[in-house]
Image 1 (cartoon, helix red, strand yellow):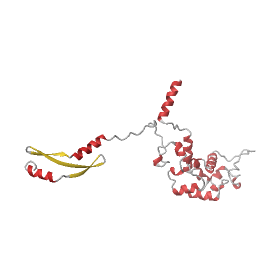
Image 2 (image 1 turned 60 degrees about the vertical axis):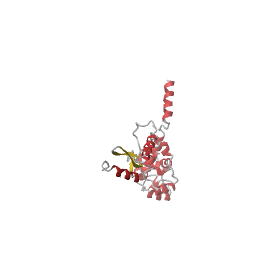
Image 3 (image 1 turned 120 degrees about the vertical axis):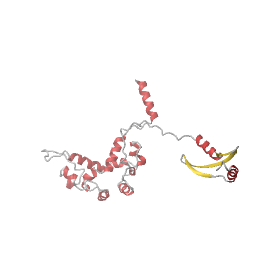
Image 4 (image 1 turned 30 degrees about the vertical axis):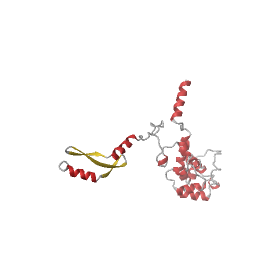
Length: 239
């Protein structure tokens, strides 16, 4: 059509500058066409605006590469315990974070635990009654029906008077309020978290996760890649 109607085509292209939109490299680029004629034909060329756009794109800096951590070959993770945005943090950072960093602790649970003065992951890991409950459950697994004559073994300072003479296996299935010093209000709060018995408290996943994080943090290398390289160099020089 253009070849047969050169003059008409010239008039059309002089009158209209046709633009359309195309997505390229996640950017909206306006494309334009203009015309010029040579003997016997009409050619289409990119508009100056399009040329400038591509020129600008080619001069842009490439996206910065992620900084290497030095632990790219490690596979361990605790993704099902930690909020997604915090999965890559050091254990030491998680340990000092607020308890809401743990998956499943929403505003209500956080409010309940805060009422018991538990605000950080470390607080949760060292919660006195969790540690007592966990020790009772662990030791109950070793208990038999025979108590040696003359034995002085007891946990009188851990349980209320009514439970002092009971077997560990009995205390494990007792209400959490059997633990000495655990207030009625604390028992109610724990109940709202699904904790009814001493065993329930020992198995409360949030406390177990917190304890695991705090323990792991003690054995974590928190030096940067640069610091570790310097340390390796010093070790080689000293040998």
